Length: 187
Image (cartoon, rainbow, N blue to C red; front, top):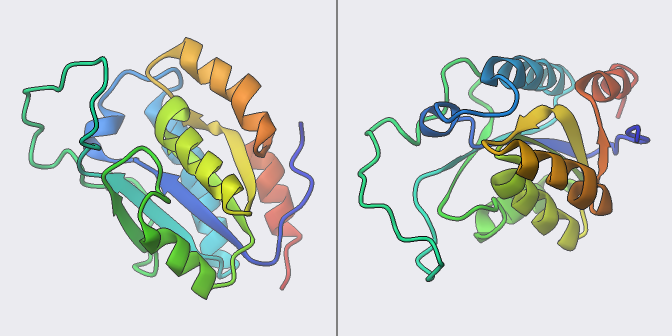
């Protein structure tokens, strides 16, 4: 489905494009994801729209069926990749859970800016991207996903989330769809 609208107060949320995550094998190449994400970052900067860079540096403490890992991640695991375009005006959020809205900081920042729509991009489709998009939708934001800016270590999980979950909570289109709307954007 195409992306139908871009609100005047839209923010780009970039999920987990960090050293430890991009090193995992994904469905689409990480370079494609970063290239498309950078196109959006550049256009959001040009239009003076907020960009939020999110990384994860821990995990929730609740019990799951999966055994906790005993492997200590490398020191640079949670550092955002240097390939991302930056202008030092981005909002930086560090999370401990899948979703970026689990702590109040992101919601508080977006409310101050009177944001009504979020574009969620990054890795992994079935974890950080889906959780953040779902939380945003539940908080009343219009949510947009660019299908060529997300990926997952599992193609099955990626396709299921992209085709069956995200369309229920977001408009899903491509980077080019969104860039076209951004080119016509004025506030």
